[in-house]
Length: 478
Ligand code: NAP
Image 1: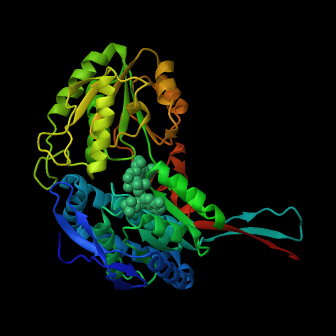
Image 2 (image 1 turned 45 degrees about the horizontal axis):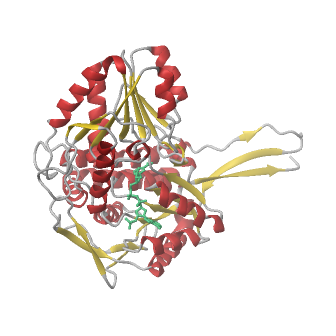
Image 3 (image 1 turned 30 degrees about the vertical axis):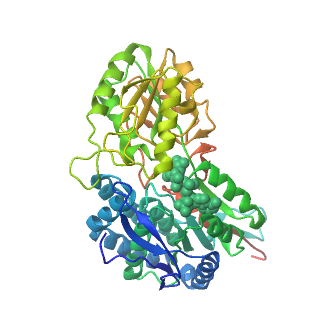
């Protein structure tokens, strides 16, 4: 890890070493990457107070002022792209090329929202009475809180911080326990960019329940933006009821991929490789269930298995590595259980199917055929490098199976038939649909799910809405 990045938490512009610390482990090697401050719920309440104290001045600045600071922050992050990527690979495990890409992706949110806030227009509404005038103002919603996951330690944080700060909110971030170092590195660069004290706070802790309760129960926090599992999202939803907080929930997915007979096979195989094996299969939009039409099932499966078997598995900072380790022992045990349950129920591993020969937290990239709706792997979010293939005959059958889960984040369709494309896009219960493409996420487009995948959207012009209140003003006696 770069010695110049902090390990203390960041509250009100002060670096807080904490009375105790917790270790951050490199999942590829088991080495300790660093030790960070282990804060208490009282510290979280201090951070909320700091954010509240900073709110009036920050929200009163013009969107242009805030944008200048956000752009400066983004430029400093980009200038540190290489050390930040190495830090991310060390604490998270993803290959360096992906980590570099994530740093740039994170910056794209700061830049996008910096500009978008300049267009947070209100309305002038034609009056219903000659003596009155009506208008609306868009104002910062107040103090916001963000709870972020380990799979994209910089991008998920920047996606929330960019929108919140651009809108004029101040923010308290609780990063994931596995990846707090990237969040603290961003705090250091925020300070250097001139983000005022208290506007951006990072509280690191090994007590997510205590920190979560402090954020949810605080009447000062008006917005909670969470990215993580559906299970924790539901808990936070309940905990926020008492203060009627606004919630943005980016939760789990179980992405279907529909590959039709008329698809361009090369494009479909490469699309599935990208959508499945990025970050070792640990993304919320990862292909989870791959439905392949009968006419191409054999050729598609063979090609996918060949490509999958050729993926280099290893420590992320080594050249050519495409698949790194899983995040922790629990994650690899879950993948192992899902695969052995599927194989015991009749699925077949064409490649992989077990832990990788390297040992540790490495799982072999796997292609499973003969998966059925009755298997747990069909219903669960795999979050590992396992492609689960299901054969289908008709379009209607594929759509029915694709929608037969409780979540609906991303979906993928491979077809060259334009009529089918529109039918399938419209029929899928997914907040994001990629057609003939494996990587749909960009700052300019709204990202979010249907059903139990969550509430609200991040990115796009919609992403700013989560942090703005609309105030209606009625003016009489005109
Ligand atoms: P997670 O266990 O839900 O953790 C996410 C965050 O919530 C972490 O910061 C975690 O802290 C915190 N947390 C855990 N228990 C909490 C509690 N009781 N109260 C408050 N906070 C709590 O999820 P994960 O395993 O890190 O991430 C994987 C999940 O995130 C997957 O389901 C994935 O699909 C989803 N995800 C969704 C999106 C999206 O945009 N829709 C993007 C990325 C990931 P600790 O680290 O201390 O446990």
